[in-house]
Image (cartoon, rainbow, N blue to C red; front, side, top):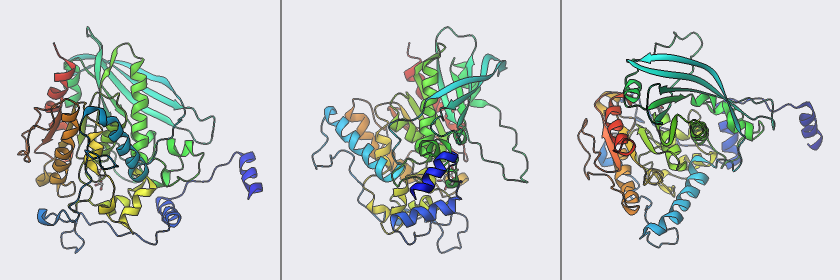
Length: 435
Ligand code: GCU
């Protein structure tokens, strides 16, 4: 053993990547789990295992962990109790759900790959492509180069707020048709017109969206190519780490107001936006779009996608290894923490929970569970002296509830945040463009 480790060390080789299935099987073995319960089918309503959509059957575990009760049973009664409760929730999320971001992570050196002067929607702007080279001196075999684009309005009299998006770039399958051109940059133009910048981070350049990539990317680099421990960070935490490095960069840019940087994403990147906003308290605002299971919704519900789906080999890499235990032998009802507590960690900062129309999008995302989590998180804003969610009943589609510092808005379209941007920008402007 020692000899072979030494040989590996001397030769400077690291274990080769595993497939997601292999790593998932390795994880189950390590946790002593024989098999997991399968996830729900989201496609075929004739399948007996089709995802539930009946609200009456959606809450098999009626007890949801209390937000405002400390682990020792005492009530969180005053603002001064919050740091303790916050730390307790962070520990549960770290250990059981998302994994622990390492205390020390390698530094990032940013390089400007290109600079272009453009006119976008009639606004003069400067757009840069940036590459964040992650220090890999501890394991030169693993290279991590963070890909970011940053566009700032050119003619402004003050530092610009910036909206940072987790860009949705699906890897192209071999033989698949070329990706269609990106849609007209609607929200980007709106941002520039307000004197704000926008930035797009490619999450996959930080950490692959695939369990097979877990011993590469930033997670693999820190682990020197070895498989994850069961409470190590998953891709959501790694993507959030990447967003944090972008914010470091923005903080050094004299043209950017780094106290006014929002994080935004949809779907798996809605989950990542929630995790980023919850953990990195420097972010000023967030649009958490259709984050679904593992994001801002009540996880123990049985409606649309379930914990079992996320625990499968196609999605487990988003989470800590420990998370899969809740798909067997444990149940989602055994989770000591839930999605409203993740959202509560965003308080008291302005947070906008967005969702799409189930009529257009389908049943996967659990509209009601998302609203429940938002409502249950609201007391955190109130405790911290802000205004929580302004409604108590699910608002009609296309009617954003945004009078408070925690907003909820279901738009009438499909799987995109775009229709929610005008409301989100109005919401941000309340904080960023105060006269
Ligand atoms: C799948 C997955 C969801 C995820 C979504 C997406 O549908 O089950 O959890 O949010 O992909 O990222 O588009």
